Each structure stands twice: as C-alpha cells, then as structure tokens.
Amino acid sequence: MSNPTAPPGMASLISQVQTMIEESGRPEGFNAAEWVARWIDRPLPALGGQKPAKLMCTAKGRALVSNIVSRMQTGAYS
Image 1 (cartoon, rainbow, N blue to C red):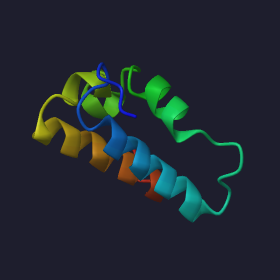
Image 2: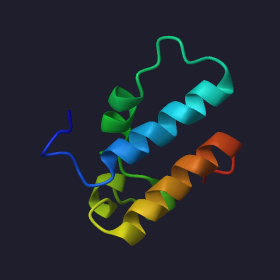
Image 3: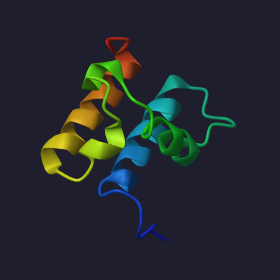
Image 4: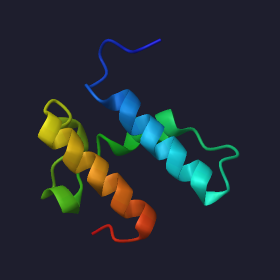
C-alpha cells in the first residue's frame, strides 16, 4: 500500500536503499523505509544544506537524491 502523502519517488528510493543493504550482506534488523523517512528530512552538505525531501517533487531532483544514495554505498559521499 502506498502512502498518499509520501513524496513522489519514495517507494523507489526505499527499494534502492533496501537493495544496497542486501548487497552489503547484513540486512537483518535494518528497516529501509524507516531509515529513508528519517534521512530524507535532514539537511545534507552534498545538497548545499537542502533536505532531500525538497528535491523529490521533480524527476531531476529524484535523480540527484538517488545518485547521492548510490555514492553512499561506494563511500564517495560528500
């Protein structure tokens, strides 16, 4: 069931994070939806202090947020 108040692309972002955690080999006890819900409302230096949630309403913004999440997995996050 989807959340009608969730930002667009939230399900995709949660799936991306869940996949990353599963690939790490230690998914036990991790709740991707809860982590994303907390993370998305925190200002990020990589976004000039903006919250990822503010960018989720456009395709370009969602792509930027997804890219940041991908960089976290590789350790290239700044």
